[in-house]
Each structure stands twice: as structure tokens, then as C-alpha cells.
Image 1 (cartoon, helix red, strand yellow):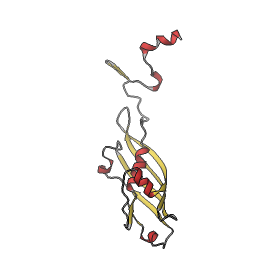
Image 2 (cartoon, one colour):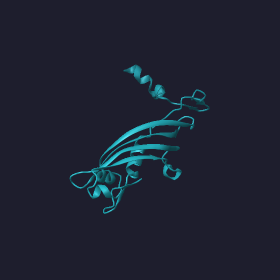
Image 3 (cartoon, rainbow, N blue to C red):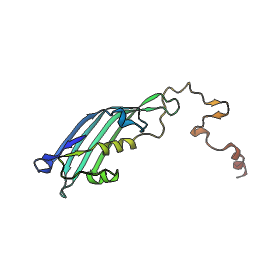
Image 4 (tube, one colour):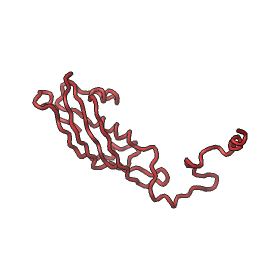
Length: 158
């Protein structure tokens, strides 16, 4: 996601609008836990501040397809996030180097890191009624059934 900043660098423009629709490739999604991420809308602007540094203010919206935590069936998860701040500081946080004296800025690493932060720890499909919750020597533990049954008698003592 290279953004041309030559007009911003020369002072001809006070900001550069960002309006991108991006579909992530399979190789980009590898090891992220996301099955599919298409048609992500990226809208906002990049501006230059008084210290000759760049600020970014964008909104990223889309739908990621994740595996259900119980059945591994694909589940759609909508997300919307706002990214604001100093471009150099954001790139330093994610250990990316900003290339000085360049005519473009790559905002992909910033967007990707923020999308990864939006992945829920657990997502369950709406149609999980046919899932086995018990078997030979195992039982599905949910939030409702938390606790160690061998320690349950200690509650009576207190």
C-alpha cells in the first residue's frame, strides 16, 4: 500500500487523501488465523506536521473470516478501527524502518498490525447446536462450568 507523498513533501498539498479497497492475499494471511480478508476499506488522510514529520488518520473497515473455536467452520467477523498518530512512531513500534528521502510511504505494516489486534480470542458460530460437549474421558469446559470439582468441598468449609 504505497502512498505517493511527493506533493506533500514539496508543500503543494497539506494532506493526501487515502481511499483504498484492499483484498489480502493468502500468503499475507499465513499464520494469522484469518481464513479470508477481502474488500477492506481504508479511508483517511496523511498530513505533514510542523516538525516535517507525517501524521496518519485512517479508518479501516472490513469483514474477516475466522474459524469457529468449536467447529472450525468459517465465521464472518466485522471490524472497524481507527488509526491515528505519528507515522514514524508507529513504524518504530512495529520494528519497521521508514525509508527517508523516498517518494512513497508504505502504510501496509501499520494497517496489518492493527487488524491483527482486532482478531478475537474466541469466536463461535451461531449454528453450534450439533456440537458434542461430552465424550469418552473428556468434557467441553465453558465459562459456566469453571472450577475444579475436587476443590468444591472447600467452599463448604468457608
